[in-house]
Image (cartoon, rainbow, N blue to C red; front, side, top):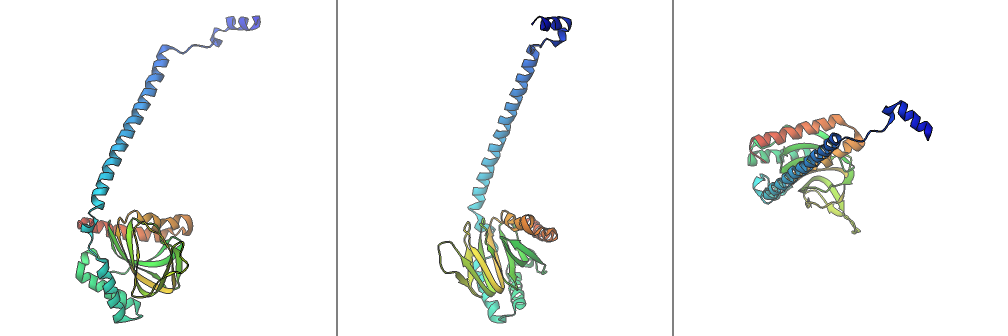
Length: 253
C-alpha cells in the first residue's frame, strides 16, 4: 500500500482523472443530436411511406384506364392465327403482331423480333418482347424442347395464350393437372402461384396486366442464383428499359 502511495507521489500523471463537466456536456449533446437525427429520419420515412401508399392505392384502383390491350381480343386473335396457319408458329406470330400493329398502332409495339433466353422460376425458354410498359407487357414465350418451373407470385394478372403445343399446370391439393392445349388461355390470377410445364415444343402469347416492374425481380433472380448469364441479363434489361421508357415518353404508363 505504501509502495503504491510512493509511486503516485513520484508521478501524479498516473492518478486517474475524473471526467470534466465539459466532456459530459459534449457527450450529452452528441447523444441528443443522434436521437434527433433518428427521429427526423423516421419522420421523413413515415411521410414518404404514407404518400407512396396513397399514390399506389389511387393508381391501383384506376389501372384499367392505362391498358391498351384486351385479354379477350388477344385470345381471339390467337385463335384466328392458329386457324389460319396451323402448326406454322412463325406465321402465327407474324399474324398476331400485324393485327396488333393495326389495332393499337406501331408506336407501342416492338415489331423487330429480338429473341433472348429467359430463365425464371427454374424454367428456361426464349422470349420476344412485343410490348413493355409500367402496367402491361406482351411477349411471345416458349421453347422447342420443353421446360418446367415455378410461375412466380406476381403483382399482375397473367394470360398465357397457347399458340403451339400444350401447357400443364398444377396447384397443391389436386391430383390431376390443368391442361391447356393450343387455342386455350391459362389465366394466372394476380397473387396466385402454380407449377407449370411445357411438354416438348410449346409457344404462347403471354400478356400481363398490373404492376410490371416488381415482376422483374422474379425474372432476374435465376441469373444471380444460378445461370450467371450476364450478357442475356443485359440484353433483357436493355430491351425492357427501351420499351418502358419509350412508352412513358408517349404518356403510356
